[in-house]
Structure formats: structure tokens, C-alpha cells
Length: 137
Image (cartoon, rainbow, N blue to C red):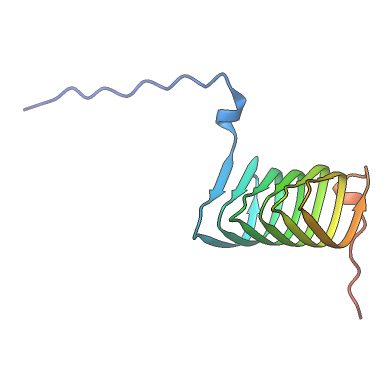
């Protein structure tokens, strides 16, 4: 018995740009390591050990753990972050957030209970011009 198959019609594009964002979600109990690039938003509920480049926003939830190096436009940390963090715009550390390592950001907001340790600098320079940590020789 022959059937007439129709090619599905192309879906209309959403009017809301947030729906079309390139978002990567690392769920609870998931571990990811390596280099992550070209995403609009990274949401970490699990564990990530990576270098993050060419991304717009980093969100680390209360259950999330991020270790590595990040150059990003904005970041919100409610879990833990350890490593080099360069934020061109606003860095928000929630009351449950813990940030340690080298941090350079345009603006910083820390809720009551949030913690930051290590080297911290606020600057309006683009990330590419931000001071780099020198290695001991």
C-alpha cells in the first residue's frame, strides 16, 4: 500500500530572542571537562572543569561547581567557582555563592553570605586588556 508522505512545513521562528539562545545546561550529577565555546548562556547545575570562551552569560546554580578559566560578558554564581574569572560586565555572587582564584570584572555585586577570595579587581577594560596573572619562573 503506497502512502503519500508530505515534507513537514518549516516551523515559524519564535518572536522572542531568548528562545533562540544557544544555551548549554549541565545538569545535576553530570560532569563535563574541556573547552566550551560559542554559547550564549551556560547553566551549570553539575560539575564543569573547563575553559569557557566566546560566551555571553555564565550561571552556576547552588548545586553547580565550576573550575577553570572564563572570559564572559556577565556571570551569576550561586554555587562554587574556582579559577580565573574575567567578566566584562556584572558579576553577581548570590548568598550561597563562593568564588576563589583570580577575578577581574566590570562591576561586582555580592549578596549577604556570598564569599569571594583570592585576587579581585574591578575595571572597565575589555577582557582582552584585563591584567593577566603572571606565572612564577
